Image 1 (cartoon, one colour):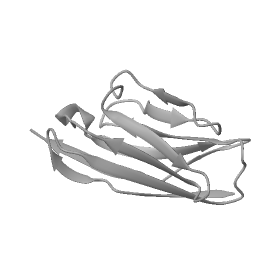
Image 2 (cartoon, helix red, strand yellow):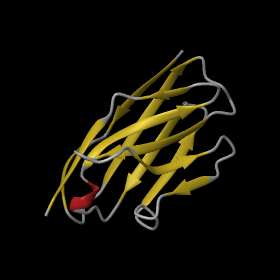
Image 3 (cartoon, rainbow, N blue to C red):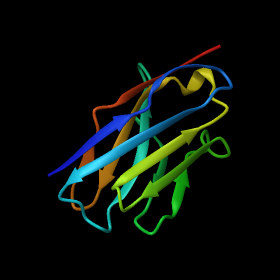
Length: 114
């Protein structure tokens, strides 16, 4: 089992920044990928950014150039630095861990006001 604890969401004005953190604990696999997804009301959950175990990032087009994913393997933590936030970034952001099994965090709300 793997537990994921997210933090860092909140309320911010458009153009502002937030940094999300997700710490994994439990039975961690060294080859696991970790990433961030988001889900706005009425929408499907979508990829924001992910990072493989060898630190190769993948970004959604909407995140490219504004968001940066990073990973501290020693701390089993993945971060998402979000800059130049827009109202359309408003969503619940979920951390995802993927190895033999996929685990999800509980989600953290990000609200961007115009």
